[in-house]
Length: 342
Ligand SMILES: Nc1nc2c(ncn2[C@@H]2O[C@H](COP(=O)(O)OP(=O)(O)OP(=O)(O)O)[C@@H](O)[C@H]2O)c(=O)[nH]1
Ligand SMILES: [Mg+2]
Image 1 (cartoon, rainbow, N blue to C red):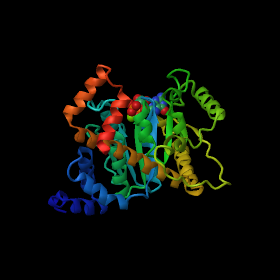
Image 2: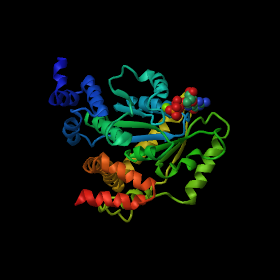
Image 3: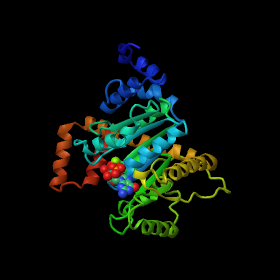
Image 4: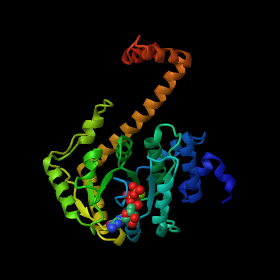
């Protein structure tokens, strides 16, 4: 295929759908850079996506996420499934050091056309990292990957936002980083569908498992997503079948560096995938993903237009008024909104 075909939106789309990896990489670059091609590409690909199962792998730095992802990808390949991997590193958008490490750790997957690995460059994409990640996920989905794995470092709200774009979220814990379960602090326990206690070759793994079990027994964090996002857009959520049993997050011990527990972890993911389909929760999550996407896009687009509409002179004046306490920020914001809407 001549490379000039990849210089048009139509050419890129048809090549991507035909399995051309160069077209895929180029499409992702357009999306990341928010080039003129980005929106037409996203619009053309969106109807082709929706079949992949999307996994989020999150947890504190160094818990072994990349090593686990590597193991999972190999195990999926052994089952004949293709895997797209996205490594997101919002904490160090410019250094790229951790990502380089990831590439090295995932080296044994290189050269396999059934695996595609991408590190997310975070800079400048409209809608921020969460939306850019969702867009790349959608692109891999349209390109036909059976499973898409997103690795994020679980440290803050944006990671939770990114994880909420997944169908199945695996929270990775490791012993020896303090007695407490690390995720409690970061508030990512609520998003876990599965726990992996990695580095089970180390002391304290059983204590971590016990701590997690206690946490889970204290209160099933069921339907938190709905609570959290449901009120943000007035959409009707599908009702649950009354006979449907709530999912209890399983806890899987792994030693990623020795390929131990990987098959069990993969089986847990696949069990959750089935659960989502059978319970109707997959549909619910698709709704939540749509809500999250729309919220981010609307928020950013409206803010951008409002700022443009008000003009920098007016904005500067408002900022000054708030600084000098002539107006409180709520009143100032309200006045800008009223002006924008009038
Ligand atoms: N002992 C032991 N070490 C492991 C295990 N899994 C991973 N490691 C090691 O832990 C270190 C960190 O592993 P990574 O896979 O890079 O962890 P990560 O969570 O992706 O790290 P960041 O992306 O930087 O947050 C590496 O040196 C791994 O070899 C395990 O099961 N046992
Ligand atoms: Mg990593």
